[in-house]
Length: 287
Ligand code: ADP
Ligand code: MG
Picture (cartoon, rainbow, N blue to C red):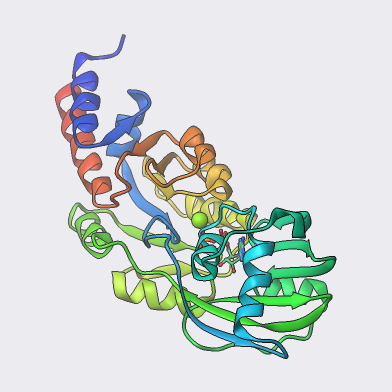
């Protein structure tokens, strides 16, 4: 039988906007010593803004149009920023053969031309000789018919409570906070420093995030638990692999919410330390 105090704990958590899917997770949460975060949409707002456009052999408007059209079927935060900067309606008749390459970008036929939009890995994969952009920020490279067409620099800001959330976890005695991201190393370093996260891994594909969590799990002491916090479709396998998966409920994908054990209704990372404290209190009452 499940002690009543677990229900009291789950009720208390839900009043704070933390949905716990089962009483067993209260115990796991209470024993958590390591919290691993995805970056985009979890520690950062997941809302990118276009900061600069660097076309090659075409106008800025034309480069942005190719990128926005090719991305128009993607729900990735990068796509949303390009749609917003483009600001015009999309004529779907101009778009065919859309393909999203997870952790890399998208490919589509625009006006019969093959347009690829994504990171340096995608350009390398396609054998496009691109001009590397070294400014701090997320870079979206564009190729048209395998020829480099330019790059678009975009950036995302940390959530207002992200730094305080890391501090609260440290104060609650969490031994280790880690950030995993598919984004570039210079962006990861910048965000990690700003938030006070000592350990981070960048340029990861979705599968690398799973193996990253597995390595961290192997380094845990016995009886200590590891939590992963994420928001994206790509995060579902990692959410399942961690001892406890925590998903962002408001902006997060359905797949992430489904795969998670705990859902933060308001996407506020500050609620993680709060949930751990509620769980510890409720475990002390039970045993
Ligand atoms: P994160 O780990 O930050 O949540 P993702 O795994 O979603 O990031 O993506 C990793 C990287 O892959 C992005 O930083 C970007 O360079 C590239 N990427 C993924 N999806 C897209 C897309 N739709 N358009 C352009 N680039 C993309
Ligand atoms: Mg993500």
